[in-house]
Length: 137
Image (cartoon, rainbow, N blue to C red; front, side, top):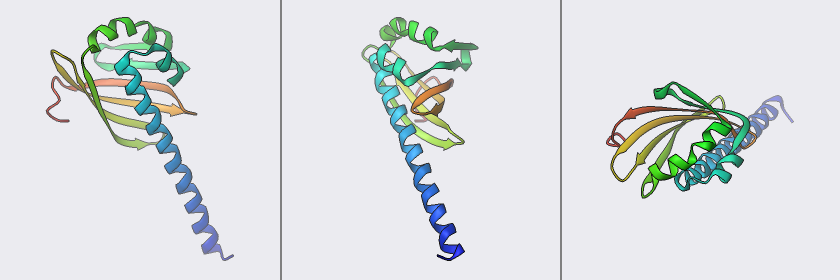
């Protein structure tokens, strides 16, 4: 096999692996928002790595996995009757950036969220408000 063909084959294999990893990360993100809408602590716990950190940038708060899960009771009340819409904006260097519309019964918020995902689990996440409505979504 010529060097050119070997190089092309290697590029094809790497491309398949990268696309597979991105799709796996997208599946984790999809499951995240499904569980978040239900305030499903068990499902969220499975998605978070044990040493995960969640940064709520607007509040200057960084939560551990346990602290984040402890807030689900309060979150469940806030999200009741609401909806969460999200779309993946980009994936770069293992970090996925997502635009999210939190459509609560009495208000909306547009957020930019990032996720670092390794081996099917979220190792870090951040959240920052973009707008107090979802007009830009």
